[in-house]
Image (cartoon, rainbow, N blue to C red):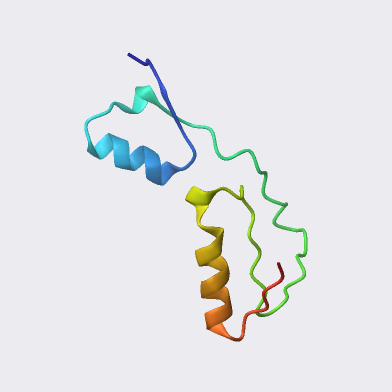
Length: 78
């Protein structure tokens, strides 16, 4: 049996705590993608949605693209 469970978010930690796991068994390690500094200005482009993730069948990129196209005001680049 594992002595620790690694999680990506505090939400996941709360989920497991509610199911009886002790906080000392849970470690939030994040997802490995650092956020830019709050002071860094990010250019905002209206109606642009970016897929950042692995393209695997289980991720359902096809559903993401179809939904984006249905929104009409969202630019889809494939």
